[in-house]
Length: 464
Image (cartoon, rainbow, N blue to C red; front, side):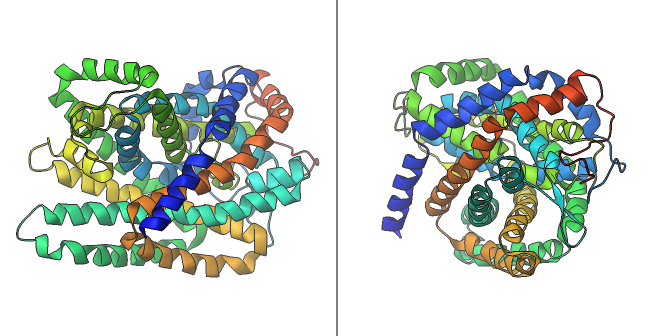
């Protein structure tokens, strides 16, 4: 297993080398400029996202599509991912994660806009869309659509399934090991946790996107507020050191951080590499996953749904990840060599009695919702490759993967997720750059010219 982990780490470091970082960050900046800083419409986007009524053709409401996408993004990336970035890249990684979110709003808007614009209706009368359809219908490159769908169908098992299940089983194991009365059950708890998560996942995903959206509409707002409230309590408890922590994050982002205590030290390169990588893992801007569910939304025109989708990155990274990052750095646990879930757990342990419980409940709900959201991304990719007959087998494999992920090695799972994420982002980023003219034209027609309420007419002149 150690040899496999080392091999995966080498490949992950290669995938996330300078070329991909430049492509990802360059796309964020390019689209921000090309779309005249689309981030300035974030307040308008939030207002639209709160509408739950049916607004056009589609399978779920705009709010349902947003919460399903948020279910997939607000997950371990916000809890364990941030802590992992700090442990590997130092406090400065938090700023790079945040900047990835700020500029990534333009990318999330763009990929959702193209996915709704080029979506189709499948044989079951459901909406089908995403980067694979953009690559096929927009760029006329079906082979790239196949590549993206194949990468997504496989990557989903890493970022959206095994990583999530592994995080919650590891945390519960560590919680039980802390108490003498439950320490004997710690090792076997990963199987119990895996079995429970597997059963709950099977109950929901077998009902399809409508069931998934209904669960996410109710679960996501509550779980996000619950977790953020816990973070704010921690910041309030240690408010005196917060200004110095924020200053440290900014300083380390551009200078790196020397070894201290149990922290081995990290340069500016590591801060950027892990900040950007974990930022993508958290908000998925440029990854191409969230547009798949955005294409299923009931919307009057593609720009409205694109704006709604862009709020996902705002909430996930600009708000939740930033708060988590400050909490983790402020706790000082990273200086003791703590990593991953253990680092976040140490921070929440500062809340007397209920701290670990708040974190455990937050992570459990985040994990479950992410597994639900990503199951849809994966099955739609499998459907694109093999047709409707692939949906049920894919769901069955997904349920099995939840159990496998619960007992797998964390380093191997994280490395696999990093590799898969990076590879699937490439064709999606290329499509947005190549079709930036379409993005500008649609944005001008529906947003800049004040026609946001109009019903969209796709490129072929027919209703999608």
